[in-house]
Image: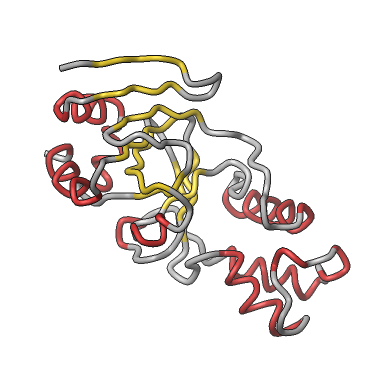
Length: 212
């Protein structure tokens, strides 16, 4: 077994591991709560932050995530509503994951996600992607077709818009993500591991072994 450890930057500590057993021992030791809830069910995250195959990386969550394709005023409103109903700003303070590997791949390299220690999460069986849900259920109905979430202006956020958005947010749950299909999930956790294999087919046997 060879284990090389080095600092990537102030946020991330990368562990380059070429020993399957060492990976399993680390996950079993640090992610027991997650394994108790999810068992052998793999949870994926698409990311460009990890490029090397057969690599385990320890990540520190960002607490003030900046929106890329969403206007800041809408992002802030969603955070406000999530905090109102669930006690935390889910759009700014979350790691986004999914059970569907093909969807994860659209965001970058496919990795297995393991939250370290305590965590909480939010997901809705009615929402695959919140931004797309806003476009279909709100924008198309009260503003007009051909307008995307990223194009919304402050004047578009009417009381009717906010009410409909709150109705969507109230469909979110704090349990049961193991039974999801292609819905996104927002995890709140201080630190987490990502593992990328050279072949996605290794994910399932790894999960079987780490959950035993």
